[in-house]
Length: 387
Image (tube, rainbow, N blue to C red; front, top):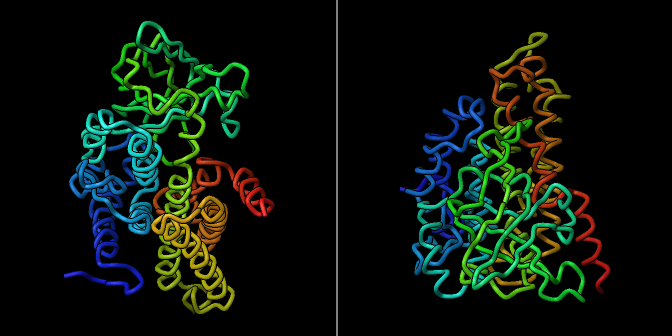
């Protein structure tokens, strides 16, 4: 029997939310502190996601996916992030930018070959777009793809690749120069690359401030030869393919930011109803109760922006601006909410024994990946000025 059936969501969406909540409570949260010291995406999390169908949330049932709505996807990521932020990042990357390009741009052979394994968690996916000199400016990619006798030879370096050293499948964007007379963005091509391909090498594993369960790796492509049949879409479509899934990716990151903020607020409410100062519980001090009210209101606004963007995707309506607004507002407000939460804990909030310390480190990255806050503002302004 379902608990907390929310009438705003469909039965399926409530079921997905409930399932994710159980995984977060039983599998992720009890182990999160230990996992955070290991810089590795844990197998226990992967197994739980795979068994529950969360690895293929946006993939049709024909390819063994769950075919869930974007709303269900957002709700699931909120709950998973409350259990472990890094695990929610991996889940978001796998479901959006690692899987959806194949669904949307792959031919039948590619879909049949790769999608089921991604949807069932037999293969973990990663997305190789960013390079040392090409972060927000994706058109500045230097990785090359040279066509040689029915195959492509990839050479270059990719940076900040989530689970790049653990994934079995990578979407790689490279410069193939099919139209040298056109701008660089028109000369990028996307490829599906099994990570056991010779020449797909892991460089270094980066040491990060937070989200240790979503480790990032440098990937070095050195004479990495893949068959022409693994090219995704047409030559020159790489930039379009890369950007096409950023909406879903941004909704995912915004959702996880909401999840972290919810976790911080819940920890704060619990702490302020147990801790006493000057003969009162903390929540009985007006300054504290007002702070909790502000945190809750910011969180509610952020969550509504995320769900609105997800609903637009469900209705197949344009969601570029809404996704950027959700990502911008949710991540920046989440950082403020978590910071306020740590302040409420006082010195205890700074200790690793308390969950708020880890959430504080984890949430900082959300304003950076899938497009920085500044990039989101550029997108929003450009969409506003179109009309």
